[in-house]
Image 1 (tube, rainbow, N blue to C red):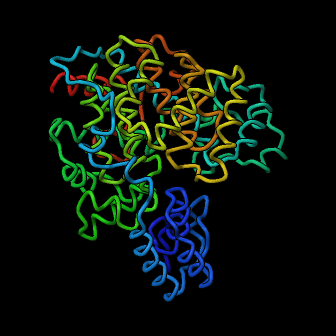
Image 2: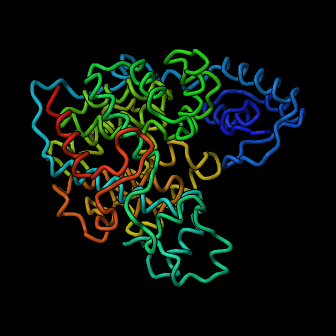
Image 3: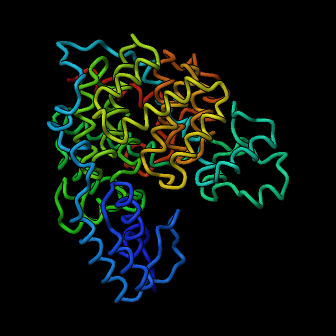
Length: 455
């Protein structure tokens, strides 16, 4: 039997690493010429399991070129450190320590879990679709900008043929077939973080997280940077080298989608939340990929305190990100665009003009810009927050999830969320993380609340 694993073979990774090198300002022209002259392929936009294995000579060359690419120095490295002490030194407004943190209410955590699930589920059927397809499908049913679930009812067959729903998600994420929260890595990783805190507390190490993944995370439920790091662990590579070794996805969105619990359990302590998220993120990511986790955790920590609005939360997130980094620039661009444009479609078009031709749709930078823009433009409203985050395309389920997490937390409790978003979730989620399948969001809120009370 010939089974080809995707996202891990050297020939799948070279094109992505060449694209990352171009974004980093590393001169890889000579390596690029050798790759294409040998018959190598550019970076695909999505993984494909049906492609035949590469010839042995091409696979061997791919591994060699990946190692050579890793030796090229980035002129941006000084502005984008990965070590926590260097990040803190680069942030002139790093938040100070707190003597005591306020308690975060269980109801607010319940709303955060529900919000994350609803935002994720809203984005699932249109994940991977181009922006034009998302707009056309929603407009065909009068749901633009999105204020409720996507549906296939009333969509012309020709339009569905041109822009088919995400084939894995459509059976469980359209209005006509939602029956609880289906499994998704955007929720799985939060469950793993909860397990991590239950077993090791806030003093966990990156190695603790690595061992937890090997024990509890099915390999097939890890993607992009997480899948590479998982494979590196199995090969005996130790963190943080797991994030660097032949991992062209190290500045994609994966660490950002894992950060929520770190923020939820540090109310009023954005520095503590960011530092904890950093220990999580460096298993799989570097630089801007790590900043995504730290930004999200810090913003949610301020939201958990309940003393700020969404704009204050975003500002808190920026304080833990090196200001000259590309991540900080992306967030500032998103905020500025949302503040100056009344029509959110115009905001999205502006962001796509900057990032669409140069960055993969799962890269952290375009998604950070879109997330910041959506939250700014929505001004705390839950429906507008998740609707705008999903309407901008790119990693729709991840952006919807993070926007829903923050807006849900700020709402104050589950009763403040519109019922048409929460009722179809039926207070249960599906997951392959042991011990959590079909768990209710109220139970998850109670478990998270326990961890928030134990510094």
